[in-house]
Image 1 (tube, rainbow, N blue to C red):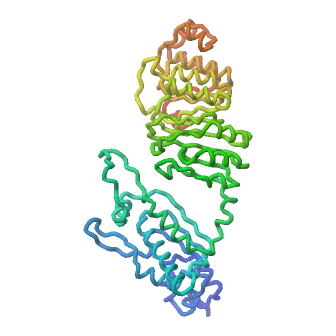
Image 2: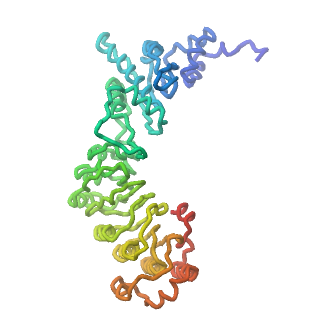
Amino acid sequence: MENSEFGWADLPLPLLEQIFEILPIKYKGRAAQACFSWYCALKSDRCWRYFQYKDDIFVRRKFTQHSGWQNHIDHYRIRFLTAKVVTKWHRFEVIPVANLSNMYEFLRTISNFSEYYERNAGEEPLSGLRSFRFHWEMLIQKAALNQFNRDESSRQEDQNEKHKPDEVRDIGTGGTMLEGIWFFLQHLYGLKIWLFFNEKLEEFYLLNATLYRKSIMYLGLFLNLRKLVVSPQHIDDDSLILIGDLQYLKTFMLVQTEKTSEERSCSRQAWEKFKESNRKRTKLYLVLSGRCKKEMLIQMGAPVHSIIWENYIGQLTKDLAQQIYSEYFETLTEFIQKGLERKKRENKFSERADIPAVEIMNHCTQLQYFALRERISTATALILALKAKEMCCKLCIRQNALLKRNCWPSTDFIFYGIKVSRKWILNICFDYDLTAEKILEITRDTRCIMNDQQYKSFI
């Protein structure tokens, strides 16, 4: 390049515009000071069509007594941005950020700027914006959350709500962020993405968006939806009927966590209409996750395909098992308990999961996958293996959860339809190795009995 007559300053203007279009915004101002040709290129609209908001842009460090040195939004710099660049935007994207207060303040400033010119000059600065993408992930540092809570002084905490010192508190923005986004969207008159949003969306996740029951009718309007994951409090009879009409929906998951409010299930009549219009196109999953202290919400009359416990602290009881097989005996194909048992259980036969597990396998004739993490006796493991062979069902149980004993009386063998003699069970169940050998012989599956590490990784 030393012997060449041309340098970077002599590149064609369209090429410079194409290069500067992907240049981060904090370097565009510096590049404009390099030479006159770069300055002219950066004055064109093409270089400013795309704008991405992320942490630590348009900020200045400020010291406060309660939080020390922090990055605060710089309104002086944003004033020049709004006066010279905003009208050139075509695509605006917000990536996940840690400082919600700065993001809210940035959107509020841009919205106020647009509103001022609309009222006083009759102009629409954001009318050229065609695409708005907002990526929301609640991966926020504790310091950033504290800063946001301090900056939003208008939000007052309920003084009557008391939390224990070791209790995990729910974190949110009190609707302030949603209000700021809604105010910003009101000024995007040229936005075109929403026109095609309901036809393009294939997966939708809505978990615990509200503390109390609030149905979302719009869930049934995404015509191309393939997968829907939603909390039970966002579904009512009307929205359920709309979801049943979705032609391409394959997976419908109702996820219950510790933050899910205690609400009633949808009515049996609504589920009947769902089944009538859906025609078995969709697989329904009931998922319990995390430290949920509530019982599983039984959807009366629902065509449940799978019940999945993801590290759920609850346990399988007789009452719960009875509700499961009485409601889902025709449709249930999978009952899976993921993770390890997180709550100590009594060793008494009446308190364990032996009888509930056998009852589920007895009544749910379509069962194809049964994974049980809870403590059962070796005799029960043999009975479940015989049932699994008869039903062609895959069985997974924990080796560390087996108790070397037989608690089944002779009368229960007849009552529960156990087709082997009690003497045969007694000859095997008091030896762990012999029990594992017999179960392998019955099921012909090496992964039927697994240690804790295998169970956690495989299930």
